[in-house]
Image (cartoon, rainbow, N blue to C red):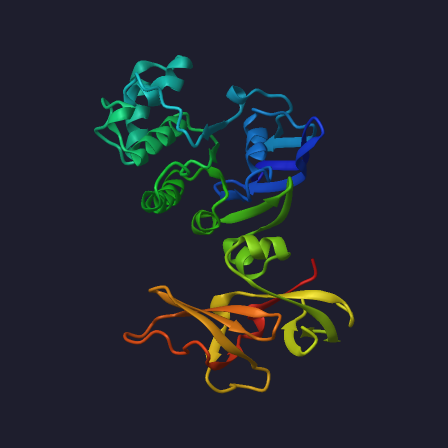
Length: 360
């Protein structure tokens, strides 16, 4: 038996001249919470539909538990899908909605009852069997949809933006519930979302997609701390980009001249030669502000804007006539949070490993 729950091998999907999925290869481990993350139209939902069997690849192969799926229809695949709109039957009770798939498969009534009640217990809806969907909150309806999928005991649960219809507070609560549920049931979840924070919060690993292609696969920490390219760095969280030219390359370290006047040292991630144009990426929260230069490499600038955000304060600092950088500092101390008012001369520093050299 394969160690992977799902594998995609050079899978493409064309709709006429449009390439929705472009030679995607992925391996998703058994019992993993795996997210497909990207902007609208990037191919993530089509990829999910290819796994589910709602679409057939134009090229390549989808494997589930090591078996090629070919044109196997959805109902013959060991997967279930939870959609954003839940698709509950309004005229049926919660019990009837959850039991529907088992009844279609002619499962004995006693077993149906046992499995339905187990599924409702899993999603923390015991005692709700006789209610109808219109008597439930959005979060409760979402849990019924989950129970209906889980009652069939799929090997893989596919979730297509299932929290998209919920308000922000409920969505955040359901993120934690979904992750806890996945741990309890121990099956593979493949989760489609365009919400970066959602993917970072819930996933064991993330595949970032754009224009039908997978740009990077990694843990949330790897994706955030070590983005493979500018798109990933820009899409996941907030990032400062400092374009410049390599003026010195000494193996482990590179010196980049930004705006033709500001040398910045950054760890090398690949062999780069002097004269090459690159981009330095550094997260706002990694940068420290100082009233005096902490070391000779510190960069000076002038505070142009200060925005107090409760948990942190955001500073806009102009480094050169062409470059403004964003700095976020935690408001850890009680009292005055704005340490550097507008017009202050400040010095910026960050740990060497906090800066990322991007060549694409």
